[in-house]
Each structure stands twice: as C-alpha cells, then as structure tokens.
Length: 480
Image (cartoon, rainbow, N blue to C red; front, side):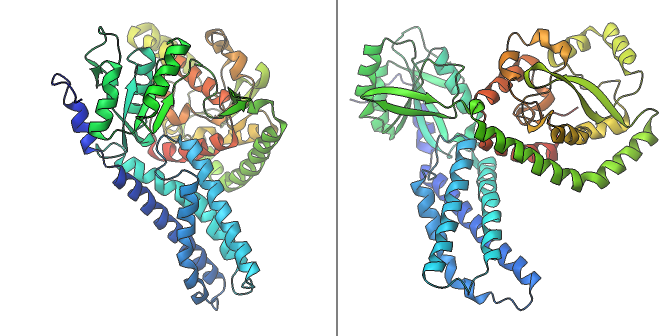
C-alpha cells in the first residue's frame, strides 16, 4: 500500500530533507571539542601556576575522550532527541562527573596517581560540566532551525492537544523533533495545523512511516476511550520504534514524572520536590554561596552605579518596594532607583492622555517607553543591573536567586488563584519567565510560566535558568 495521490507533498519534502545522522554527528563533535578544550585549559592553567609542570604525561590520556562518548551514549545523549534542556543538563553533568571519577579511580588502581595533578583533574571536570552543555546549546542555536536538523515525527490526533504539541515542537526546535504530518479519523479535520498538513486518517500513518522512514510518533488523543487507545498503541507500537503518549494530565509536573510498575499496573510517580527537605536545603545553600560570591565581586560595580544614579537625577540610590514573598508574607525588595521621584504622576498623566498606552500597561504591567524611567535607569533595566541589590534579600532569606516573579500586593487580585501555588516558594531575582521573554510576556502568561516552574522545581531547573539568564542579559532582549 502506498500513500494516496491527494496526500500533500510537504511530508515527503520535509522528511526527505531531515538528516538525523548529521544532527548526531554535530552534537558528538561539539562534545569532543568541548572536552578537549576543558582538558587543555586545565593543563594550561596548571602550567601557569608552575612553570616546571610536565604536560607530556597527559598525552596518553586524550583517547579517554572516547570513554566520555560511550558513557554519554549509554545515558541516552546521542542523539538526545526529545530531551528537555533541563534533563539534558542533568544527564550531561552526572555522566561527565562519573567519567572523571572513573579516571581518578583508574589512575589510583594502576598506581599512576603520582604522575598526574589532582588540580588538573578538578579543573578539567569543572570546565567540562560548563563547556559541554554550552557547546551543545551553541550547536542547537546555530542549526536547530535548519530543515535538515533532527528527526521527522508524525502526530496522531488533530484536536486541541495535537495543536498544543505542534506549537511546542515549533517553539522549541532544539528538541530535534520536526513534525511532518498530522493524522486524524475525523474527516472534518483537514488543511494544516501550525503549518503542518493534516494528511488523513490514522490508517495512513504506517504507510507514511514505511515510505519516508519516520520512526517517531506522538499520540495526542487524550479523550479517546481506554480500549480504543490500547488498540491504537498496540497497532502503531510496531510501526514507530519511538511512540510518545500524551496523557490527559494537563497542569501536572512534566519534568520529574517517572513510570512505576505496580504489579502489572502502570503508575506515574510525580515527585513533589517542594515537599522534600533535602532539595530545599540544597537550594538555600546555593543561594547563600553564589549570592555571597557574586555580591563580593559586584561591590565595585555597585559603588559605580550608586555614583551614576546620584549624578543623573535627585533622589535616593536605592528603591524599596513591598512585594509578596513565601506564603504571601510581605517584604521590602531592594533595587537601584531607576525612576524619577514624581514618576507616578508622570505615568498617570501619560495613561490618561493615551488609551493605547493604557492598554499596553494593563496587558504587561509595564511600558516599553516609560516616562518615569531615568537615563541611567533605562541602562540599568536593559542589563538587569537594577536588581543587583536584591542579593541582600537573597542573603536575608526573603528571596532566592531563582524563583517565580516577586509579585506586587496589588497584583494579588489578578493572580486568579495561582497564588496558592506560586507563593509556596521564595520569589527569585531571575526566573523562568525572565529567560522566556522578560517584559515581552503578558501578565497572564507569566503566571502560567511561574506555575510551571513551581510544579517542576528542581536544582537542575535552577541551574538551567541561571545559565540562560547570562545569555538573556548579555543580549538585553525583552528588558525595559
């Protein structure tokens, strides 16, 4: 059986241009280059500390890079298709740490420990856990939007769930799943969804899979009766080696869910990280260590900014604003002053005279060209430097480095019950909404992003957000 002639040619074109092998090769090469660079940097820095340090002994260790690649492959990092950035980071850090431990134990067992510097191994590990994820992120940034990147995937179900899946895959090309076709038995569902053609009934999916070598499928039909769904999974499980089922569990945690076999009954374990004391203590320790470290390094910058603020406009250097903290407790968030003293009067006049700006303010709770903001304040906001003093709130335990937005008391009425979840954790200097678009995201969408963060909270998610924050701040996107 072959595809009917009336089937759009788009699936054939997109699937034929995909080059999964090239995708895997590029990721592998980025790993090799990052690992080599990490080792070379460690040896170079060690030699700077000791001019007589012998580097020749490390030559025989370079083939050990192959060990990293093997462990990465066993961890499912090749090709790593469909992994969220947070899960990919977790696997990379754990796999990299495991290999360095293996190398350390190996040198001890073979009595080679005296030949090698422990400092070199420690620095190489530190550089590797930073450079390997960074190199992968750079490769995806450069190539994920290309038509040949990733693996073709089909979506079974053209309803609202299918549309949501397609929108997510289009928004995150780095996942490596390129939707080529949608199938649905409903004859009224035709045309295209999010630019992906609805090809026809579900029975055509195996035909397309064979003709175009499509190995990935997503079942987005949560409303289908249980018996029909089981039949569908059995029928297409033999056609698609990678079959993902989207359950009817919207709003639940999605990052830290694992399958459990309960005597032949499938269970989904949702780990409530917020209820575990261990992760909370680790998060607090990270806040204290990183907060103090960054605060000390930033002291000269803080002093320079304070002088510029005083020279630019009259008023105090710092601005204290009441915000909602853990469990709704109010606290004073400290920031650099970025507005004129009569800012509220200026804003009220502007909104009264400009209905379109009033609409913008109601949607985003901010204005792109806010008349209250000073010249220095505009610069500080663009580079998020106005939030540096909040490191003091972090050290006091009122905020965290990473968390939901610190909402204003007057915004509580607009949170529509989401505050019951969002206020279960400390607000953050940075957060998921800041690295997802910052001020360009509407208020309601910020709430949803903060809900996602709380439900999927983990140290790995925090580390990912911190890394993304550096990228977003450097490019100054979405800040005003």
